[in-house]
Image (cartoon, rainbow, N blue to C red):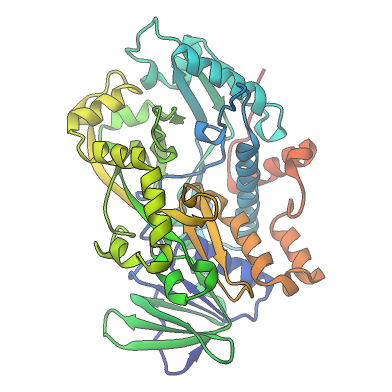
Length: 505
């Protein structure tokens, strides 16, 4: 993609900061809703989707709550809370509907190969965890969104589902697994670049790569004025717009603070880096075809949920295990070590201190992760692959994520592990903060943002009809409509070239 040459006195209807999955989704959605909108997209790097949306950096490649055990916590009375899992599963269905709409309407090669069929499995060991998984399966399969989920404690069945995981395992160890055949792997980097290719061909869309947005301020005419620096030439670029979306991943927080909106006061960020073990033995890679998620160790944060992850990247099957956490003061993988200290302001200092004091176990966890030796990482892998060999795996650095710290009247400050949209009261500017499940639910997040920031237009019959065209389940409760779930899944699977799930016996 070429960078549009800047001109003096630029203006646009919409400015998107950050060329990742969120900006791509919002940009496509807005151009479908109102084709005459002018959009300017600013990206600090010289390519799109190079930070959190990149396949090697993204920890979530199709979060649909089929296998992520942290989305179904056990209540004090022993029952399973399925509300978050159902919500995320429904949001992922919306994403598939939107992607199907794009794939049917446009011929873009990236949109035909970004998603692949990969079964999603949960695997646990120990009597307590086996009991949890059994209850989880019984609770989730009450929802049509989880129809077809299989449960087994039969080792022969598990050997068929995940031979590497069962090879060499203690035969006396109690084990259990669930399998959702409908699972997918999503390359969000490819998807993002595909959507930006579409946007680039539309009238009124301008790209400014290798441009760093340095200032955001509100002018007397209620429009936002942004100042960006061309990192290639050093030239300043100024642009005015009535609406700004900050979708810059870990870089969103500093820009939100610079905007000065009251709604952004009190927010802080806690950066966490990630690492993977990448399999380099083709024979091992070929023997595993699933995403196998386990249970985080007691006292570990949600981000530490271990998984043995089959991915398809650039048409090639890969196998990763992790994540292993680390700590860096950078907010972006290609950011600055000053990102964290420079984000501390008087408005968010107290929430950050309080959240830090309340999350000392997280700090200890990160310290222990940083101190891990190659042998420590291998031992963690061997809990899932008992016969893993060190020479078959190499350490890879993943992306940076910034967990949200927000002011709380009762607790002073809390650390959030999800995603959050922070918008001005008048809807003229919005920023997306946080991490998981992020990219997988980008479509529903952006639908909510459109309704919040463009309320008058979103309420019109024209925009409502277009929303239903793009997302047929828009405004409906999928969980309460089994027939619609089946019909829409059948349709999106056909359009996206996915294998349809076969119902459990």
